[in-house]
Image 1: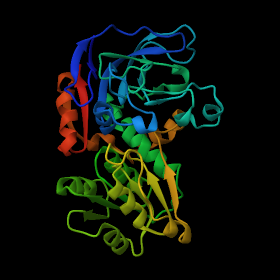
Image 2: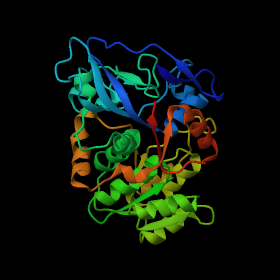
Image 3: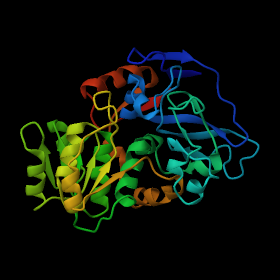
Image 4: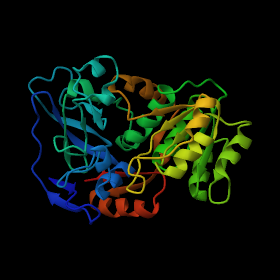
Length: 352
């Protein structure tokens, strides 16, 4: 089968013929119908993450936002059947550790990162293996299009988990979103669905226009504004919750500085080799104003039903974020375009 393989960091990705996967006893094989192209794939391609012991090895098949149909089932799988339509999380829990059993499988110490770990080849391929399928497979209603489900990817799930589970929000509160790429736009859309007000921050007019169309009540062009001051003006004193959806030192500090007293910052974006995982913060102000700093990674598989409920009700529509459908052979080019922030919204592979 064809697959996108990381041979050398920062060098053009290659399309290779690789063996089709066989199911492990606890796993299933999924025929991929669609897979999102995410900035986390770009981080992997660039070789980022060694400062956090999180560097993707050479030879890895990338891709971590798939949806498809089960075509082979391991002998110990009890719940998943051939023919089932499923989505796959990128943070794969083993289903047995204390974190998994307590609803936090996204931080399972024995878990694997789909498309990031050598034991979990990714989904920029015709087929992908899903380990611990009874715990990780997300059954899909028949009326959900695979392209739209792939747009959920890690972006929508991460944004939803951040806003619904990591912070305390009440209707009418303000959320500031710093960086309106895929995960940032997802956060805007999710926040609007949760009944809170949103201010979106970016340096691209087109991204801000898309954020407004997805429910942003205010926008800030960071090219010509003091971002924290602008956010505080729009929100009448500062955001209750602020997300850094990009992972740069500037956006992280702007996010914290945009908060009102007792506000909550959520770090979603991962850093590049410029910050190498370290950002200085105004800790005195954080202490005096009782600001909280949260990390957020993916979403526990056990809470998928909450997000699917929003889809079924029509409150969120990930398809609205899809800006481009691409064939597998264009993945190297589309990831390279992310280097200069030349992509917009969510791009999805729909032809393999």
